[in-house]
Length: 480
Image 1 (cartoon, rainbow, N blue to C red):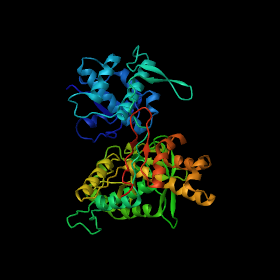
Image 2 (image 1 turned 90 degrees about the vertical axis):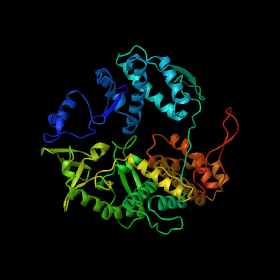
Image 3 (image 1 turned 60 degrees about the vertical axis):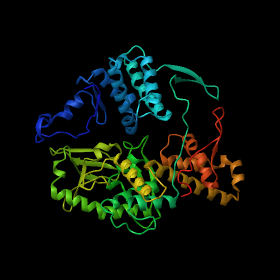
Image 4 (image 1 turned 135 degrees about the horizontal axis):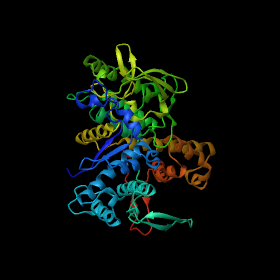
């Protein structure tokens, strides 16, 4: 074997004495992990010769890495694995990397002849940030003398001087936002997920097994703007209660959000779509799993006993012990092992289930959306979508609606409004909070120009000084 392997603490649950094979001997695995300082959600890298370097594990459990958002850790860890594999094939261990190694790796990743999977500058920027963090921690812990990520001073427009990696890409766009108008979204959803023909008629050969679930998830994300992980790990007890309002507020737990827990808002129609899924497709999947006895075989299953008003949750462990925690602190992996007692037995607490009734991994939604877009293409419908596009769509709808509302109230024309842009700081603050961005500047950088395009219907021209001719950002299904 010539590749490093990546594993995650807690990824397979906690073995029990009844677990098959060797796992039954590791029923105290959780205790062993805790004694070593390993926490759930921490990556474990195993070298090609089957060894785990305790120094590398110390780097990966360091607070500078573990306090990163779960999604960031999930992105960085695979980058570690592929770079360490590259080093190993050069006869080097992870702590022997040099700046020359990193230069060769950057060249192979972006321009290597024969590389079947060349990456763009934005992807390399993320990989470089991951390696900068890895080796920065290793240097702080004195495991290495120097980091292979060479830094250089860069002067900003405001006169400040900051450190930036020498290998930082120079061709990264600040944003390339893709979105869907309501009409384009409905067309993509109906043809790609619901199995309808472009003219709205039912497709005779459509199996229709998971369309209720998939349509409900798409409606939920398009309305709320939640990230794939945030929406995909929602628990039934966290959903707003359906009533007679136009919009409902919900809460995203800190452990599954990118930065911090926050409120979100979802429309009555979208929440009703989720409710219909729960009492139909979801219940049918649960019944199948209950008849097969699937839930009782899940390692580390936790049964929710009580959820308090303050979002404190009490659950029972497989050994009967009672534990208590907060919904905000439940990770994505923990949520897949949370169950509640229904009328006919145990039921998953997580909203979205597979056809077999098991908790659905939130990453699976990317493939579901890809298949839906392929169906649209096969039907001659030129529209596609990703979970992130639905999130962007919500943000742009809110921006446009709020700006139009303020224009009408103040009697301003679009040209006059641009002169008084500072008066609309509250608009950007609202969208920032809904999206869970760290700063208003991030929201403006991503959505300012697309929002203007959405309002005027004109092509957005972005002049990049010193980088060639004026470029046009893609219309991204806007006119569909």
